[in-house]
Amino acid sequence: MKVLVTGGAGYIGSHTVKELLKKGHEIIIFDNFSSGRKELVCGGEVIHGDLRSKEEIKAAFENHKIEAVLHFAALIQVGESYTNPQKYYLHNLITSLNLLETMLKFGIKYFIFSSSAAVYGIPQRIPLEEDHPLNPINPYGTTKFMVERILQDYDRAYGLKYVSLRYFNAAGADPDGQIGEMHDPETHLIPSILLHLLGKKDNFQVFGNDFPTPDGTAIRDYIHVTDLARAHVLALERLTAENQSQAINLGSSRGYSVLEVVKAVEKVTGKKVNLKFGPRRQGDVPVLLASSQKAESWLGWQREFSELEEIIETAWKWHQKH
Ligand code: UFG
Image 1 (tube, rainbow, N blue to C red):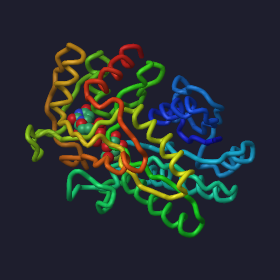
Image 2 (image 1 turned 30 degrees about the horizontal axis):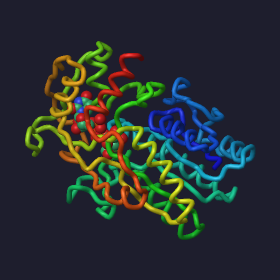
Image 3 (image 1 turned 60 degrees about the vertical axis):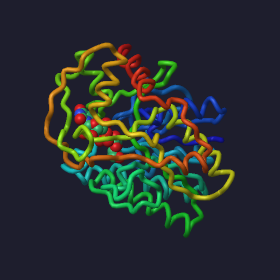
């Protein structure tokens, strides 16, 4: 298929482009390179465009016979979304509306949306199943929730078919070493520890050791970015075959505490992490864990990188080189 990938020069977007190309899809990357990186473009045609401009989106659709859209482009910092919500509603919500409006004008009806575990808010039950109530607790999660709701209405009213993929904690890097994580600033756990070990980040802090978990640190569900990328390819194939909209968790169903991640990093790298304990980060929940049953049954998704050490190994290789 000919697919438009917004944010295709970003972390998860670039890994997905790589998997789509392997399957023979034709790719048009639409990215404003605010956080996307030229080094992460691994093929396809690149349009330097901004989703805040309906004109720029329209031009992309006029010039290419696009059949489906994968929408990754978004801001991702939960903390920043508290202090500057307007920026998040503009960049994550309005941009999505602009994109959907243009898709509808051009009669394109397949949409894969990068959603987040943040749509659930504080879990009432663990593992989280897709029918768990959605109650986001930060503006970032709210923007993802709002787009999911809009998609439901657009399906009902306009026949737009979508898959909302709710990512848990994406980590790791392309096993070939071609692409990897390059956030600036880097706030995610695994790359933060690795960058600290490489002397590229001043200090590493564990945010909170008073959570109601066995070792007091927060538990998350880490998923290799290549497994995540492959789930997008499956989602596109299933969506076009079944013509049925869905929301699907992408996680591993296994949780690791921050201290367990630190231990795994020490094992992989052979280095000692000099950690400090700090206060909880605003909006962090004690445990986030996905049920992946629906991803396995509906997408036929099987993870290749099921061990945390494998995720860390690929990230470590990448960060040592870059
Ligand atoms: N953490 C630390 N020290 C750090 C960085 C993180 O202790 O330097 C902790 C966090 O407090 C959290 C865990 O490590 O408990 C994981 O943190 P990340 O920042 O790597 O990931 P989050 O779980 O906070 O965020 C992820 C996605 C977000 C998404 C969120 C909720 O990156 O986009 O899950 O679903 F919104």
